[in-house]
Image 1 (tube, one colour):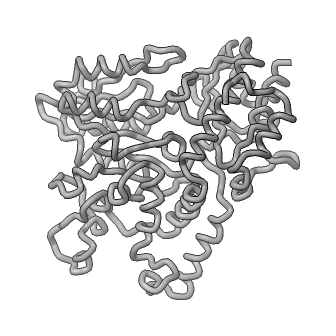
Image 2 (tube, rainbow, N blue to C red):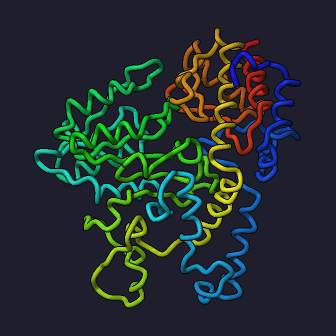
Image 3 (cartoon, rainbow, N blue to C red):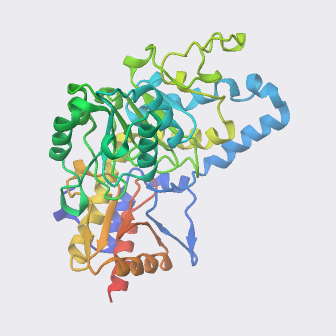
Length: 425
């Protein structure tokens, strides 16, 4: 939809919402209330809303536990022995992978460390990790600790590519230059799919191509990309990726995370921290002393699946399967473009949008700064909370608003901008 077709009126926004083919999915979520009305919830980039199907999904497993106890592993309505496999196909569809390339397990930070055991294999000649400056703390802490663990010096061997674009964004030219300059000594490139503070999307396939050409292993943190962007992990050629599921995937606070290992590593004899549930399932219960990994991503599992934590993810992925990622991405681009247009048209003297304007370089998230500075930005953020507009704040001065296509509307975008205008006076 061209921006010339947008209108900043409630009549227009409500007409778009009424014509939205995905409008019914909003009714499948619990929307928090504020002073008797639904909040305008723009925080799916931090914690997605609860699908209404989650309660029944958890209750079903509680019922099996109470009625069958240990036998629910084999005789439950969804036998627990195979429970992690129930989310596999839908997760693979969301991230653009082959089913055996993905697994739901652990947390993002734990999975990142497990992947680096296998895919960060530094040597004296090639000890370094390349990452973006200003990365999310999980990545920064994990990567620095891995460099130290292997006996190398982060001040020399953790290479951080500095932003060179507007608002602190990072150009592909800067990434390409860093790989060309340092690639000969880089063991691992680890970048995000979406930079958490700026909302900038990175070109995974190009980064993989550049990194592999220099002999580097390439992995991604997709915390802000999964369920948000059209991903093609298998096609990208990435060696591995990790993500959480409590943001756009709506699986609940601290939900089970996900990991991807490319098919070419499915049968590879890679070093790993082994666990019982990663052992080949055909011989797992023979309890032998020698670890034989299950082919594919399942081989990186440590323990049996957490049933009560996987049930919400299963319920949420059912929603994604019915809505369809292509349809969700299409709506997301229109919603984000509308919010972008409203801000640029009505608030250009007050706000700067940090996130790139190019739809190919952003997802649902828009990061904004108040031109008057950090203290004014905090004041606006608190004003929005008081008006029932829920975004989030990231230091030092960024407000993030993410119109999520499963439950946000055009009218929400207009309402958020009207709330900002009430603060500007």
